[in-house]
Length: 382
Ligand SMILES: *Cc1c(COP(=O)(O)O)cnc(C)c1O
View 1 (cartoon, rainbow, N blue to C red):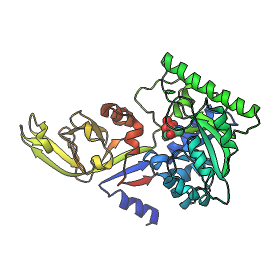
View 2: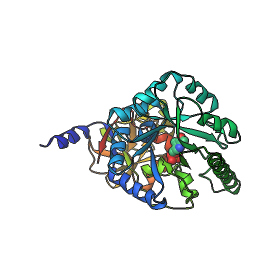
View 3: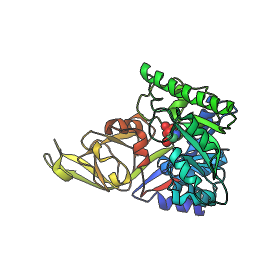
View 4: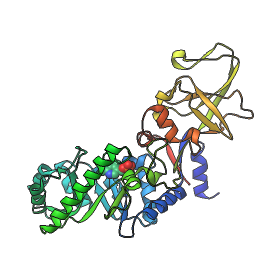
């Protein structure tokens, strides 16, 4: 038997696993490309283990699709990419401790200048070479970035030692909303950013590559002239929330599914309870099954009691009782021909088990559920 197949067979005997469809990732990249001009490139946001999809596998596939620009949140994520031979540009979107700036050089990374004070500290280090950097401009998110109004401070950063400015960017904070006041706010962010860029250029400073849109910046404010779009969530084929309205619609295909196996099947009498806290009580005789996946695998515990469903073959079954750390129980009374070791799908491509649906029930966004998905699960790449 061929080695790859043997490996996959072994992996699929796990109690639970993630399936990653790289063909869907390719579809999503092609869809995003249709929205951007030929002068704009995709900067693939692969932070948080590529939103739970597996940073190395996802980045390798993206590289094979021609992506040469990656964004991560932390130095450690950037080093992971380099240690796995990912070439190209890697921008760290977050803060890197000043004592670790040497690794920006060692691994040929690009650091975000989070504000004027941060740049000042870097300029005082003893380095042999300048570090590559993009300046972050705060236009209203008030997280990282030097305020767009502090033009003279921003210009000073360009003249500082140790820093080679290759880009300038900002981040939009309500670009996912089409409410009038939110659109006005975003439009102001956009205008203030471009005015700053003009000012810099007119004064002889080179802002380098400019970028401001993440997924919803792209879908709601298409056509902005810039060098990159920093796409995260839509690259993985899903929306941040269920029923998102966007100015532009694209044909996204989810990349990730969560699957697990039935480990035990039993019949319980009427009025028996299931699981911790005895939260589920059977109204009648029931056939129930235990499944080898729980909240420690990323399936949210607060869905307990909200009647989330899972798919088993062509049918759906409800999760009953409290979701445990490593297991959960389902009501399979109406499903015939199931047996131990049968696989079920907890997160997949049909609406009832979409990550958007689960995020909605769980009171959060898909980004959170995905990024916490599967820290102890194997990923099967399809
Ligand atoms: C996470 C992040 C992104 C990607 O956001 P999505 O909404 O997932 O596309 C882009 N830019 C910055 C600065 C981020 O932190």
